[in-house]
Picture 1 (cartoon, rainbow, N blue to C red):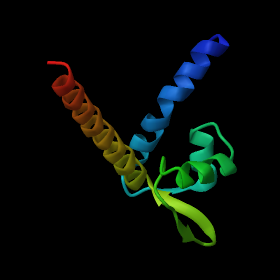
Picture 2: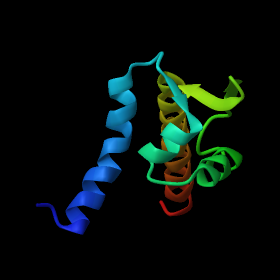
Picture 3: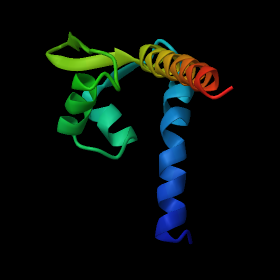
Picture 4: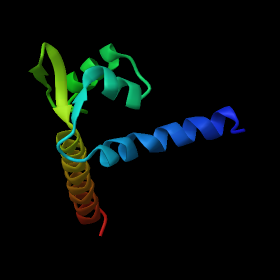
Length: 97
């Protein structure tokens, strides 16, 4: 049996795996996404407001995404963060030759 720390780590790593396993065209509801992140629906809404998740569309009156859209958004955020980090490193290198 896993201890709580191992279970939390396994849950944290499972988020992207869950989305990946669904396939890029799978529809993901807000409630399902909240469950994948082990958060409430309100936390998902706040993550959208902070641009941590892409905006949703309404389908049958419920906020939804495709798994591919969520993963693409996360990938784009990672690429932007990497570019910003490299830019900052170059700026600091120029200040301290």
